Amino acid sequence: MLSQLSIRNIVLIESLDLAFEPGLGVLTGETGAGKSILLDALGLVLGNRADAGLVRAGEEQASVTAAFDFAELPEGLRNALAEAEVEIEPGEPLIVRRRLKSDGGSKAFINDQPVGVALLREIAPALVELHGQHDDRGLVNPRGHRALLDRYAGGDVDGVAAAWEVWRAAGERLAVARAGIERARADQDLLLAHLAELTAIEPVGGEEEQLAGARADMQKGEKLAGDLEALRHLWDGSDSALASLRGAARRLDRIAGEHPLLGEALEALDRAVIEAGEAEDRLARAAEALTHDPAELDRIEARLFELRALARKHDCQVDDLPEAMHRMRAALDAIEGGEAEIGALEQAERAAQESYRARAQALHEVRTAAAARLDKAVAGELAPLKLDAARFRTAVTALPEERWGAHGMDSVEFLIATNPGAGFAPLTKIASGGELSRFILALKVALAERGGAATVIFDEIDRGVGGAVASAIGERLARLAEGGQLLVVTHSPQVAARGATHYMIAKSSEGTVTRTSVMLLDAGGRQEEIARMLSGAEITAEARAQADRLLEGV
Image (cartoon, rainbow, N blue to C red; front, top):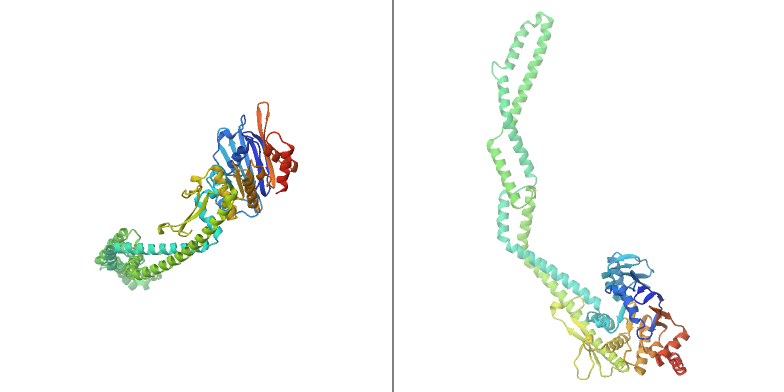
């Protein structure tokens, strides 16, 4: 509920701090005292357009701060604040502040955290529901009528929403499967050609690296072949270096015994012959290892060319070609097995649709029955509110299938006819300001709910009525305020007498300066104000006595 309202430099209000209580609060005052200014100021914290004309003359800026107390934040309000990353501690009041500059600029804050004005407009329906002469929100807005009827009816709204989600998901799965098969069929010939091309060479994972390594070795062998050939001439033949070493060793062997040094020389020469022989053997083996078939090199290069060409064609790496083959085979297999899968998905989608349809039809029947009860309840409230000739109807209309949704298969709208024989039309089309407010009051009493807002405000709901009708309005407002908070701007003493709290709005002048003030009245002040409302500028003893009777009769 609205617990505090602070206004600074808004038109005629220089400084005002108001505390509000639960229950029915009434605001009264002479015409032109500034009741509309109070509502305009409250509208700023609800996201209304910033008008520089609201800033008090001679001031650079104005501000309005409203505090709302909740036992627990409503889910929608909590989610909106969380999405906007506005943090509020449990049990902490929600404090909305709007600052307006004389040049028209404005800033908004929630609990001292800067926010966009769009967020204020988003959360406004959870904070204040205002019904006035130009109301276009709350119960007047057809978009909320279905939810209001559902709360009144108590139907299985959540079950319908869950069934809708199951049906929607089943339809999406079916659509995805159908689209996949259609794409596969459209590409079937191309898939077969690509798969045949890949199957013809059967790429293997890791093959590119292996082939590239073998080709590199062969190309290295070709490069070394000339050097090995030159070395071979040094070792082969009767005039080779190795043959010369062996011949020298044989000659030295014949004379080695003649001197010790010759023996040592022979030993060294023998070792050289042995080492040279080992070198010859290794060269021979190296030549053998590096020898390759030119046709094999051509085959490897051709294979690499094919593999890399296919990789470019399919926009992947060579090592990914086996996986590409697998995907193509899976796509072709899906075409063959797809009909069975589609059949199962179609069956699941039909079952989900029937489940939704059954639940939505049951909800439709609950809504239709509840609409008749609501129409009867509202009709019972119209005559006491001087709307004897008016009729009310809750139109529950079946929607075409393409407009079904989580809400069911119905549209709901509250319609009225104000004159006998006249057709039904939306509330705002044919109701005057006073009639509209009384229709809304009748509807809210019949629904026995406050629209989900923390605070409900009626602006001059009693315009143009008096006597028994005003008493009936006051009685219904008091009943509606039970367990919540309802504020009423009124000119009716019968309504004012019903208030649990009473605020008087007054305008005063000091020289050229005019100010609007608001005062919370005590018992004596209430008597005087209601007496003024009864008699006018001159308050008589009879008016005071009648004010007492009104207050005692509550």
